[in-house]
Image (cartoon, rainbow, N blue to C red; front, side, top):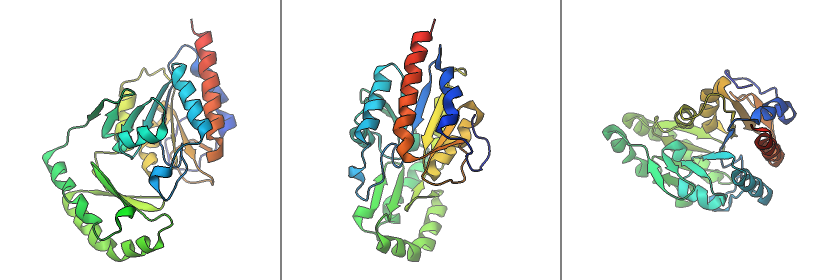
Length: 266
């Protein structure tokens, strides 16, 4: 029930019963994006927190012994504070890996990558500080509810692209913004490492809502289930689409299947 090609996901939440039935005697893994998936978008990014029911269900999944990984473009420590659930967090599109206890490891960078990162502070220097999100291995410009920032970016886009291209930075447009990052720091590369550490029999699911998540959907492919969280149908490498308001119900079904699988395990 995975996804191999870009298309419009034809399956919904009700079509996942067979997937949930496969939880007996295995260790299912839930991997999820944060913004727009577990938490609604907010102009002020530190106000983007999951609904209490979503946090409660995630906490129960972890307490039941379920495996959950948050894979986000945010820094791991920031995401941990907002999520409020003891979970493994892969931050900065997987460059950081933070344990539930707070220990954080990072992926080594090459000399060329280190040099490229030195340009990041200059790329968005002309923009208001509140519109710029600086991260260790990328920088993002947000124009949600900021039409002036979008207009300014349109005027400077050509020169920004030229400077980024010179040092090998990759442009990644997303909903209401754009990010420049190292090509090696993607959710697809993170998903490869996550899957490499798994038993092939274990069910894996990835929840995501935006362009950055498509890399993970493509890598997951037929190995698991990709679930696009979107109000409207959209082209995606995911095989399933659910609406944002269905996320708690998805988590309830995951928890119920996990508990049933634990009872039925030999």
